[in-house]
Image 1 (cartoon, rainbow, N blue to C red):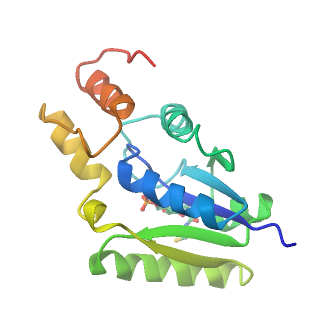
Image 2: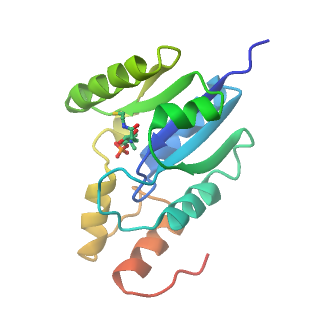
Image 3: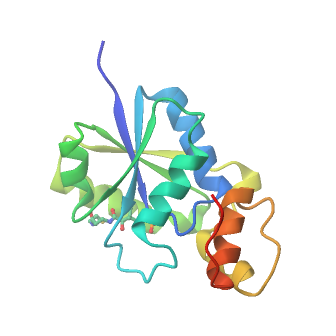
Amino acid sequence: MKLRIAVYPGSFDPFTYGHLDIIDRAAQIFDQVIVAVSVNSGKNPLFTIEERVAMIAKECTHLKNVEVDCFYGLLVDFACQKKARVIIRGLRAVSDFEYEFQMALTNRKLNPNLDTIFLVSQPKYSFLSSSIVKEIASLGGNVTGFVSPGVAAWLSAKFTNKKPEV
Ligand code: PNS
């Protein structure tokens, strides 16, 4: 039997129910799913790498074949190091496609042994993005239904400069 390891990379700043849905489904398809938080995604993140890894690990405790890690540098190198043959990405809408298409082709050019597999978001999460969640939270809005209560507490703590109780 082939051991099928898939990497699910992203910024996860913060981790939303949309991300969790993709991981849940990927965990049913692959033997092992490695959620990979990018250290150098070129954005100015709200949460540190350690916070994001801890946040995701807590949300995925029920999924025994899922591990959470972070990576510096190229995704293809991380995938290779983890012996993964597949990159998982979620597709929410047509607007995601161009960027995802470019990334998938680039990664395949960098490592022809790696394939990207897209899981289409459930319609109830197709509007959801980490940036929108951050904006709502920063303005004191209610993020219930977008992120877990734990992540909502992290957000609220960030925007009120308190440390969350986790
Ligand atoms: O959640 P995001 O921000 O859309 O995730 C983007 C991410 C982290 C998957 C992408 O930026 C990435 O893979 N960064 C690592 C650097 C890399 O490998 N770049 C070349 C491939 S395009």
